[in-house]
Length: 254
Length: 59
Image (cartoon, rainbow over all chains, first blue to last red; front, side):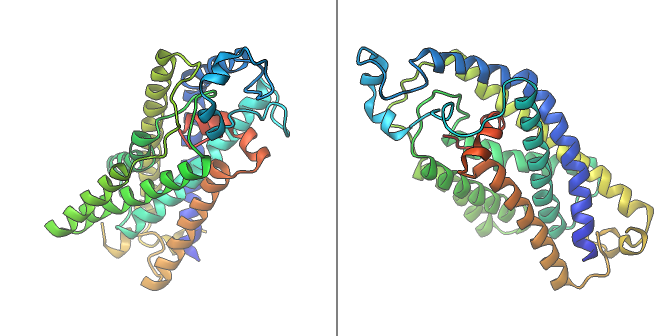
């Protein structure tokens, strides 16, 4: 299990680092926009209560969207971290834990292809990760702010996961199979989810100003790009330290 | 970089190698799935800002 242990070790360090960087970026770029959106959400009549007064025109105007998206009712249900430090701490924890998760996937897949030898190769692997996990699913399902209407959650999750798998497979075929036929199949795989189309809400009407949403889409996309570049480069550097100092990692490490 | 000396865990056989890499990758997917896609109320609320900031499908 030496290989497994080494992959986990490299992923843990790289994921921790990129998770911390991501948390810092989110604190300044995305979380303020989420908090701003929540003020619109709360102003819209007690957080989407269906029992709201009948004069609430936003409720009556888009009943179909309301049925499709029982948005943000969780203020009243279940535990949630208190605003302020506690909420920040859980966001940081989620970033670090999933940073390690993304790193595990990145290191495992790249090892199958020979491994990330240095930080420059790492950046290209980071671009691939960004394309697979942010760019492709974000075309059909752009980043959303609270209070925005959305289609059924499970349907969107299925489309998201399917798009990630198809895009990753397509990129892999193009990068690692040097034949025209495989490349064409690869392109087809990347295009197919978008021909199929992502699940959309019945109406896109929302209390969130388009400007605010646009800012959020840009912030999410750019922070994710930096996250992936940092993650890829970190894997390259840390892995290089392992393999560069000894001929066989198994003998030298752990 | 396919030479033996530059790979992690050089002495593992190729089947064992793939198995270990698959396990590591699946562990990663499980972690991402739990934090980002779990329908559990508590997990959703704890990671709310994270999910929005990662553009994971939410709510």
